[in-house]
Length: 170
Image (tube, rainbow, N blue to C red; front, side):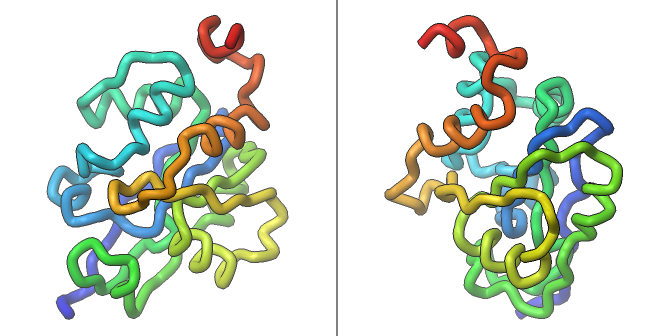
């Protein structure tokens, strides 16, 4: 394995209500220096769809979207050694300072993107005091992904609070 690699800084502000946590950035994400950089990953499509918005491509537009929609984004692992993009090869990891983020932002629930993010989170923060949920991984490698599960979890916080008319009327 190679030297330790650092993940990305969190995206959040004083209005963030939901925190989405992945495990650690993939090779493609690290290449573009932004979350969910693999174009086959379903994360951005799912989130823009939930809010009834047209998908944006630039990192700046995605950041603006997250903050405007009160969604915080980070990874559970802040630094580690990893082989490729495989969560199973994460070693010598340091977890993110999630309590620091929670002390600043009024997070109502934490959504963990996939099994690895969930397991690492539970080991480090199982008694954190904010409801947290394992979500189906948005990775293209997950054949059991179901967007409706993500939408239902987001509804627990956002239903009726600024989603597009199309979504509220369905």
